[in-house]
Image 1 (tube, rainbow, N blue to C red):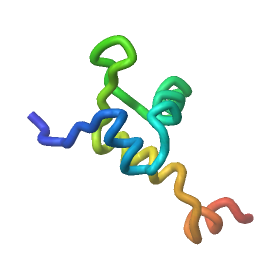
Image 2 (image 1 turned 180 degrees about the vertical axis):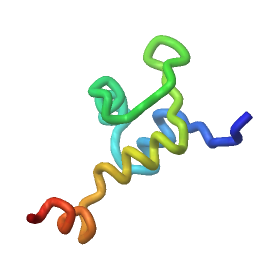
Image 3 (image 1 turned 90 degrees about the vertical axis):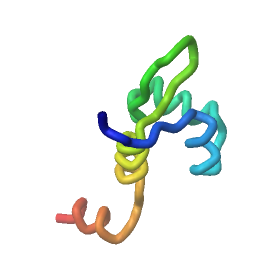
Image 4 (image 1 turned 135 degrees about the vertical axis):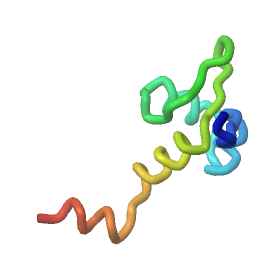
Length: 68
């Protein structure tokens, strides 16, 4: 079995310095992949968290890729 870290919504919110409501919204919108383990209870794989952060990072490389 893969030993990838798993995080709670609260841990992700704390890491990103945002509210849990924002994280729940991103999950509902399909922008942050999560595992539903109960009603309004989710876990986020480390790879899904990294993918989310990478896709929302604004910087030099991203600007170059969008310019013609």
